[in-house]
Image (cartoon, rainbow, N blue to C red):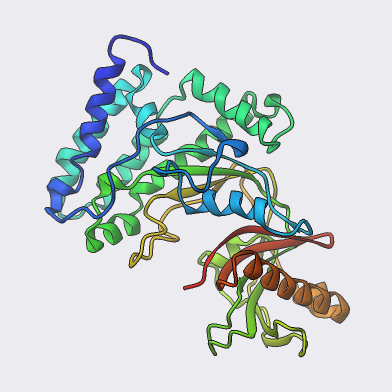
Amino acid sequence: ENKGGGGAGMQKKASGLFDSILTSMTGLKVELPPPAKFSAWTLPESQVDPDARPKTFGAKSTNIVKSRRTLPSWIETPRSAVVPFGVFEKVLACKENKAIADEYERVVTKELKDASHPEQVLKKLKGLVMRLQAPEELVKNLKDALVQSEVIKSASELEGGRWDEAWGALKSVWASKWNDRAFYSCKKSGIGQQHVQMAVLIQSLVEAQYAFVIHTVNPSSDNEREMYAEIVVGLGEVLVGNFPGRAMGFSMQKDGSQGPQVQSLPSKSVGLFGGGLIFRSDSNGEDLPGFAGAGLYDSVPMVKNVERTILYHNEPLLTDPKLADSIMRGICKVAVDVEAAYGGQPQDIEGCYRDGKFYVVQTRPQV
């Protein structure tokens, strides 16, 4: 935290900046509440209250903590900590970032406002975010919160170059506020960009053998008694990201009266593999009624994932019927138990499988 004489002035200046972006550009009515003020550098999981008001983090943080406290113990959930709303603005207002803050304000209020083709200006803003220096209090507090939440065992895991990787991943999530698609989606929907704030959910990345997405109500038939899921080899980014090919899709009666019915065979040519920490975007613009905010912002692994070609002729998911049946039935049980834990409300669930264990990474009401 900056305790120098110029800190308060810079913080006020930064706040004024965020109150003027895009409203001055478009004149559109702002639908979101004012930005949350700085509350803490990082929240360990024990301090994340899903029912807290006003919100200082988004739906992902709310849902994963709620899941850990709600789901049956056989379903694993990754531990987490949260860099809440207001931290980016606080970092920008620190004295060590004054020159960057001044340039950032100029680009937003002048260049972006006047740009007929803003893509290069958005790129410049992302570059400025990536140049930010981390205040010492943030560094210490973030490491302590991750240890307290049991995301890492010791702060020494994030020393030297490892800290540089973590800080780079955190800044990349913040910078994704200025993704082209996010900018245009907000502008089109009349959401003032100044009110889009970015919390960051930090989790251990499960080194998954398989990743899956579940719809607890089959979306193709709206049959409430039947779930539908898709599975890919490796990490879930291949499933939710823009990777060519199809996932393995199947449906199943939730009461188990009929076994898994394969709807599509996998054809995605690559899988992603890796572990470490992942920094997930958790903005206040991802869970708004009438606004498709999910997927506009980035989630960034601390260490780049390894891409590997998938050879399906010897992939156990296809060559071992007993394993495939066990995994599909397990995924169906995840669907049933998660839906029940949320009072019978249909859910969209992201999860993964490794060594006989099923993990839920996040769940949200099915739309």
